[in-house]
Amino acid sequence: DVDMNKRPFLYFPLWCVTCSDSLRRPANPIMALVEDGDFQHILRLYNTNVKGEHKVMFAITKVRGIGRRFANIVLKKADVDMNKRAGELTSEEVNKIQDVIQHPLSYKVPVWMLNRKRDMKTGKNMHIISNGLDTKLREDFERMRKIRTHRGIRHMWLLKVRGQHTKTTGRAGRTVGVAMRKK
Image (cartoon, rainbow, N blue to C red; front, side, top):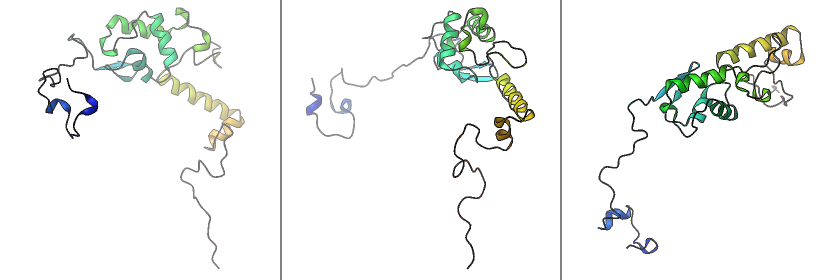
């Protein structure tokens, strides 16, 4: 046995110095993520590349419009093990996850978890993801500009919308500093 507190001051690891078999580095360590041959390193979900090495809950948060809480409840409603890696999912599990994301109310996901409650045009509660999110945001901004709300005007002028100070921050390309006068 080697006492770790009394070892000599060395710049290389302890297993190089000692001849004990228990402290020697293994010759060829084998570290495998999965043993199956059907592991997918990249999944394609809703126009987003998802890394297969990540756990499923965190992997599907890469899709715009899906956060950690929504991902958690989607996996519970789809009966998918959260300890699985995204690359280990079968095609049936992926289809089930996509179905829960598309129709969350039919799987009894609470309305307060959705990101689009009482839509202005349809009046429905829905959860919007990926490209649909960009489209809905653009439509909202256009509607606000059209009816000349304060938020719409601020968006139109490319100014801060939520009440932030604008005297010194958010100038984005405009001149900064004090103009000097000639004497």
